[in-house]
Each structure stands twice: as C-alpha cells, then as structure tokens.
Image (cartoon, rainbow, N blue to C red; front, side, top):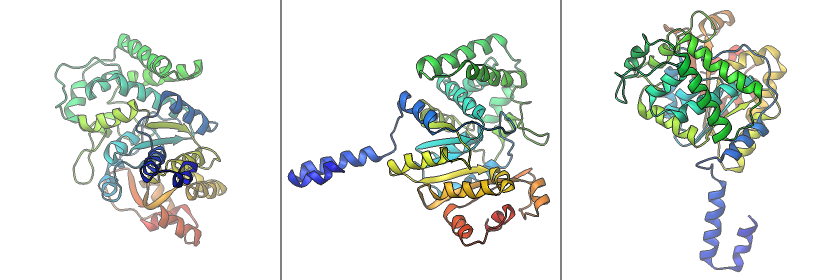
Length: 367
C-alpha cells in the first residue's frame, strides 16, 4: 500500500503497474511452495485431540447435497472441510482454488499427507486405487472405465505385500525427499499403518466406523439424488482436478479443533490477507459434539464469525437417522443412514445472534 501512496509522484502507467502488482500479491496463489505448504501446516495447526479414529467417511448421503451446492457456489473459491476422503468428492465437484481440511485428530492430517503422495504418484484412477489398496492393476481397466467397472475389476485382486512395501517407500520418499516435510519417526510409522490398513481390508471391506456404513467401493460408486455419480473417482476429470490441487500443494491438511483458538483463526487471517472469502464449510456432524460441551459450540461460532464470509457462504452439515430420531430432529425420508444439508452461514449466524437457535436440534429447523 505504501507503493500506491507514492504513485502520485510517478506516471499513470507506473501507478497502474504498481496497483496490478499489489492486486496480484493479494490473490490466493496458484501454487504453494513446499516451504510455504509446510509452514502453514505447522504454524496454523493446534495440538491434536482425542476422538474416535476412522480411515474413511461414515456418510452415505454426502453426494446428495452436491447439486444444491453447485447452484449456490462459484468455482475457484475457498473450501473448508473436516474428515477424510469425502472432502475430495466435494472438492472435485465444487472445484475451489484452495482447500483447507481441519480435524482435531493429528492422524487425519497424516492420512491426508499419505493421500497427497498417492495422488502425485499415480497416473490415473486405476493406478491410484492400485497404490491405495496395494493391489496390482487389472489389465482390463483404463481411463474410460466407469467407476463401477473400475472397482469391480479389483474385486478378485488379492493384496500384494511387495507392492505395499514399494508404495510405502514411494509415499515416504515423496513426502520426505521431494517435499522435504519434517515428519517424525512416529508420523512415518502412522502413515505406514494407514496404508497397511487399506491393504488388509481392501476396497470392498474397508468402512467408516459402524456396521451400517458403506464400504469404500460403495461410497465411490454411489449417486446423488438425481442418479449421477459425483465421487472424486467417478471420472478421470474429477480425479485429475483433485490430483492437480495436490500437486500444487493447494489441499492443506491441518490439525484443528473447531473450538480452538488457533487453526480457524489462522485460516481466516490467511484468507483476509489474500482477499478471499469462505465459500463452503463442510462441518459434518461435529457441531453435535460441540453443543454437548456448551461453551465449545459458542467458541466455534465465534471462530466462524471471524472468518471472511460472503452472502453465499454455505455450511454443509450431516446427521444420522438414529441421532435425528433421538433428538427429535425432523429430516426428510430416504434410504440412507445419513442426511446432508446445505445452509447459509450468514443466515445461521444472524439467527444465532438473535437467540433463535438455543440447541443443536434447532439448527436443522433452518434447513
């Protein structure tokens, strides 16, 4: 800004060049350097907390809200989310410029780093599935294969321990050597355990926590309410969008407590410094646990209030049928075990400040 104040001393052309330079500097970068990527992870993250571990999403309704989101949300914006691979599906559908994934579990951040390496190492979807589940690639699959055919061709393929060892070395080399991340021995051991868990279970057995949940293959081959598959593995185009963001360090995993004092606030400052606003904040069912603590819910909404928002900023929330029944939350009928909802962040905050929301259940009266 100092340079702009000085431009009255120069020519109009010089002033315009200075202004353009400042505006470019304020934008979200098209690529984060490895140093900046790791700095953001380490400086924005909080101390990890304890929560039920899981390797993949529980939610069988996550695609149902995507058509609504596409109508409300511009591409090239900012995405915030929580959890594991379900974020890739939202990211591939909404196509943000940058994404931050915040989760109280440090393990979640490490799992996303594992995914980052696998995206970078893979030439296409079939190669990605091969590396993720340590199974040799079937000859019958190619870039034109449907996602259903992709997984069906892997059904009879056994796990391969040699491939697991090769892929683990490649993943760690990508993170430690290529990107020069400062991972501890414990971090490396944890990443190895994630990859091994995928190997042992395979895509047709691996599930989120709970007996009612979908397998990885079922989650990837499911549809939205219009019968369209919008998972991140639904097409090569969807996969490659996420892959390109990973290669440019623009999916940033953070250790963050929604009610904490650091992670969300740090993201907010970063976005304001780059003249950006939050377009989507996928919170899953985290609010339920925050409302159980009372003060934590208030702190979370204070954190959200501090984010740079716009009129279309949208929460994506999820709730199980069991919990909705227990808490008396009215939800639409359907075959899924979960329901997903999209709602205005600013409208919610206004209702909250006006005292119209006094409980977790009342959140869903605004849907």
